[in-house]
Amino acid sequence: MSNPCNILIIEDEAIIAAYLQKLLHSYNYTQVFTASDKLQALELIKKQDINIILADINLGQENKYDGIDLMQEILSVKKIPFVFITGNTDDKTVNRAKQLMPEGYISKPFNDIDIKVILQIISHKIQHVSSAITPQANLSKREMEVLEKIIMGFSNKMIADALKISHKTVSIHRVNVMRKLNAKNTADIVRIALNK
Image (cartoon, one colour):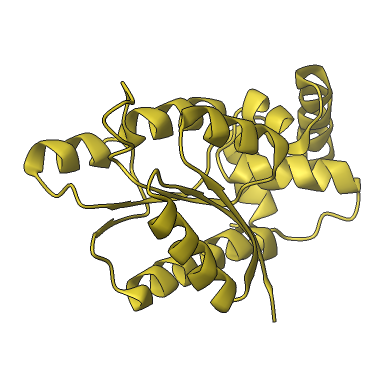
């Protein structure tokens, strides 16, 4: 059975990127994209609904940025669970990386099973958020999609980008969700939707 998560691999070494892509296909992830640099990664983030990112930290000497800088830029636009897969295990790099709160940090050379397990955990979290929402019969399909993103901690801009709708439309849906759930704020929305 195929896994519905769309995964982006950010890796400058073509052999490693191709190996990871083949590995993920063997784990039934059918939508696996690769990017070797910042421009490709940002373009794929815009065009595809990426659910998980596997990112190398060292993106080549010709780049003036690294995977940590790139993930910081991506996260400022769209909140996506990610894992660093890297040969950099020095304290300075690890301390920089952990500031971004990755789902994991796997050192190269990696073990295939480590990749499989971390992706299963992240996929489960993503699916759990969707299934944990108490059905709200009075919400439209789009309002339910906005509600799901609110619960995941997305800002209005992130929701707009993820659902490919305008910021104003998101604001209208958010107001409708709050009104229909009789919620006063975001914390209320989450509590009511998760029936806590």
